[in-house]
Image (cartoon, rainbow, N blue to C red; front, side, top):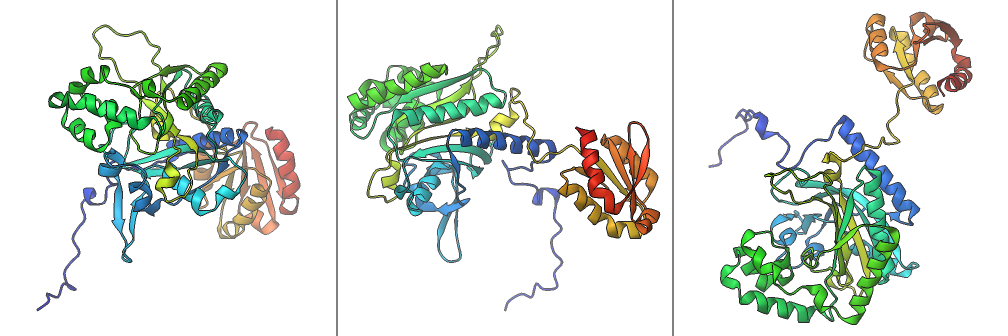
Length: 448
């Protein structure tokens, strides 16, 4: 017999029962504007360099990532948020942006457009990893992608645009860690050499690297475990196994960086550990210019962004032809949380020029009409329509810093007028509602 639970009282929720999930958070007020300002500046720079916007779904089919990221990558094996819908679809909350952009490129027939196709995107991504400062489970990235060209100048364009965006956000001591991991022609020989070397050291390896030998050998060079560092120093590196075409491509990328005056360091162990990468891989870090403190632990530079070329990605998503492509993404949370970050005021943030005060029911009814006149004239306001007392609203007006106050009381509502007060001189004048648009034009001239 089924127990009737309809009369049971609902369980009383505790504060922790409804708290935001671990690694996810609310973004409020000044911090929200900091994110908004960064995005606007990044999108502006991207637009000047020829990129156009794209927004892909937060939910993608699981195969978009399981087929592209590669077995043995933390993102695929440990960090993806997956779900099964009532209809039986297997979906993923996107852990990164590149695979989704390539899927959109193929699905929307962008191959038929003039190539290359240059796109920028911004939004939240989700990874189930241990939350740290600047590394959250819900993270925000600004990404740039160039699809449809194998030219080295595309690699340089991505790096150039990303460093410019970071420079505008306050980061003045940037350096690019860069490497080439070859293509499908020369990488297979390197993988055999690397695997053979590590198998001879297998007893000394950390547990993760013992698995990587079998699942994702390139990630052996990405290991941070102290047990593997000495072994890694003597390991073969991909840059030493490049074919002539890959070597020439990498040389051209470096020449572009030198021509643009972008500081760089060739890091032979940089691989970024995702299967779809080929040739160029890079990370952008901030160099610590402060002199070292004796006895203090040397901190690892924080990567602000990174990316690389992904010429093999399209075929892993079912394309019959390769689509040469390159891209990169900036970790916006890391940028905003950094002490080097210089907040950029977004266009949406308008300092109020007028504080609007209303008094009485008749005035409240007509308030929106007055606010609309001000909005159409592009005069930002502050207001407290829910307040009633004059003294209380005047006190708020004083604290707001708005140079003018408009007072609209019961008498003004009947007379179809408003009182405009200059908060600095305390002078005021009565203006007919019919004349308000012309008065606002005059007011704007005074506010310039």
